[in-house]
Image 1 (tube, helix red, strand yellow):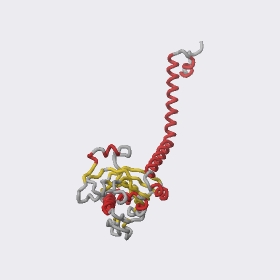
Image 2: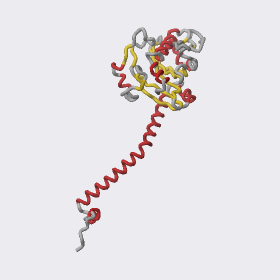
Image 3: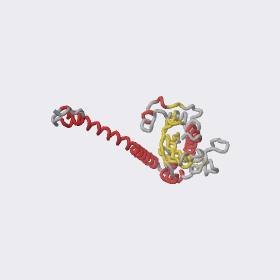
Image 4: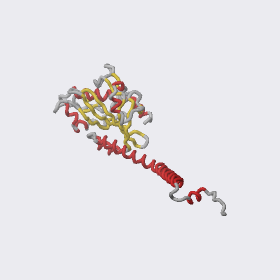
Length: 264
């Protein structure tokens, strides 16, 4: 009589195909092999998937920003890699727990707004959000352009815009007014590209670091001024105060300081 075969694999294969034990073991082995293959494929494809997600996010951000009138040409000329970050305006650093996807929900909570002292409320806002989404264009390891949403009070109501600031954090690269309620033919000219064309190259501060930007009452007379709009003095004053507030210590000042320290 032949000796008993102690090899478990051969004993399994020797069982009839109708055997419940053989069916269970084979099913388990197939499942284990498939799971291993799937896990291996996931690990191998993870870098590719991450790169694809990053490319999709980059394209989404670029499309969003280029949808702002006047910004497409500016970005094309500047080159570099565009990214988006939600910042904590108080600290000037990336917000903790708030992303672009959750920003709207966060700002629906009154607790995420800060009252502005009347003496410092240059833009006439009353209160300021604690978080804001900004766009940064990078050239290598430095920020070459910062796109900053701003808002203020004009003659007819609220003015909203996006200011593009050069990497020196003092030179305006461009502005795009995205919303206003100013008087047609007068203050409403702030939306015209011919007026906005006066912003590139304008400097915010003098050599001593004092904020000097202003919309002039007439033609600009220096590097810190842009042309005023005839008959729209209050609109021009509103734009002046809006820019001064948001690019000062109560607005994006902490962020600009952090960029200067190389933290972004």
